[in-house]
Image 1 (cartoon, rainbow, N blue to C red):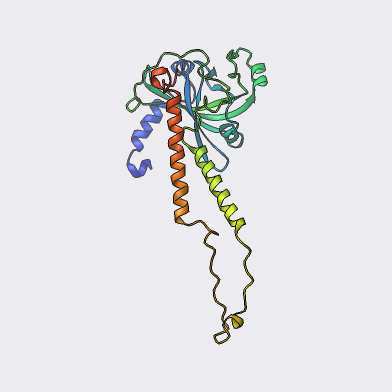
Image 2 (cartoon, rainbow, N blue to C red):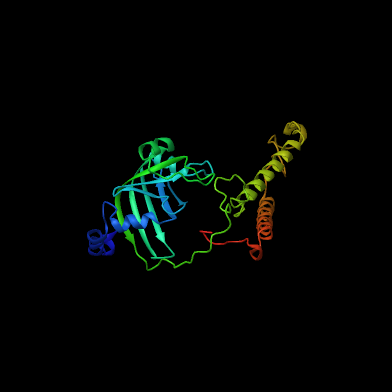
Length: 278
């Protein structure tokens, strides 16, 4: 693509000037104060996943100039990133400072999943997080292969909001509402599909047994012996009107869920979106 678009010389200058195989002093300082990063992984088939990780400053640990480590906290149990890394160790990390330097840092490398007790035995200096629910279940240890800048020209400059009352983050919670509820209406949509499938199944089971076909020669003694085609059941297969009604019900349910969420946390009472770091 560089050759096709004529960018080879520009890319070579970037490789020569900006791409390192380690974390230099300024990079290590930058990593040490980040509160979040974006993570890209893929499974053995190359199917990709991107996600977000967050924690107190320093949760992404610099072990040395070629090694990083970050904790995996309690999540939804899917283990998408860790599962990918168990099949394909390559990963990409992107850290962006939106509020201060307004700059980004890419780190590409190979990862190894390490259980918490093994990690603490090998690196006893690692901090143990005191907040309930935020204790690491395991760690991802990253061998650094490439580090390079993400330029500032398209990074928005954001402002941190004051930290909310203690416990507002709800680390480790299983309360669906505190985790965001059904914000995008996916659960409501799935529930509507299940109900629609149940209704169709019930209608199919309620249909009377088909009457045995009468030979055509008996029904039409003076006509051809070709049998008359069977009349299809009107309820055996859902038609376009039924599909449209299911879709409308899904849309109505999504609107109801969002309306309940807005009523339960009005901005005037301290609810609503308060920023990423509150």
